[in-house]
Image (cartoon, rainbow, N blue to C red; front, side):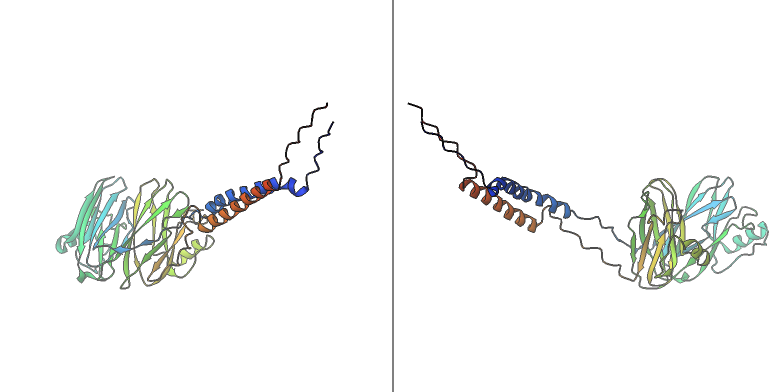
Length: 345
């Protein structure tokens, strides 16, 4: 009887070969996934660019029972058609009466009759009466000759002017201003968080339409200093000593809007923030670049799902894996089955 041949021990390298092959093949498959993950484009904030106002602007004014106009000072460029958006927030009637004669400041010691006689004799550019809770508009064109003039507006309801219900429209220059838009969000951010305004003259009027994209209320507050960085620790005392160029309350509720109209005195980088407690500390700020180029955004990564070097590397690894598999098989990694024994006689 012939004994079957005994199978010798498998060398360690041959025993490890299938794991080597598996590792190489998995690497070849895994690299594209990793490359795709690192190649995902990052989110880069947009930069808002101010554009000419086309000689039109909208100015929002609230009328209150204090009695006051809020805001009481507005800036308009000469050559501009301004629409005053008037809202009576109080329980009493008020008027918005814009005097026709520029550079005249009325005497608050006048009686209601004296005030009426002055307006009758000198005229008005707008005279709108608002019932409690009502809304109205008044449109006035300030031609180029009014550059750097000041027009006073008052309420003619008896004793409201005498109690402090008056304000002023400053005509900032003889050229149209610029118009920009900004948005606020509940993630404590301005979108965009950079505005660019390139002017051909100074000072100029900048009108920013601020829209609330979330539900929380905010402010849009612009520093009067250029190239100065505010911080959550110092902005309150800073604005007490240096009033902002503008500070408007952005009403709560998605879709609410407010105009921030202000005069920009010169070129530079102005920071704007939200003054609601905690919002600035959580990153709600941005920068206004006036005749200054903003810093370039970070380079965008490749938009390819899998980059070229990843494909090449994957191909090489797969090729090595296939070669190892073929070589191992040829060298007899997988033992042949034992030869059948001859039957006994």
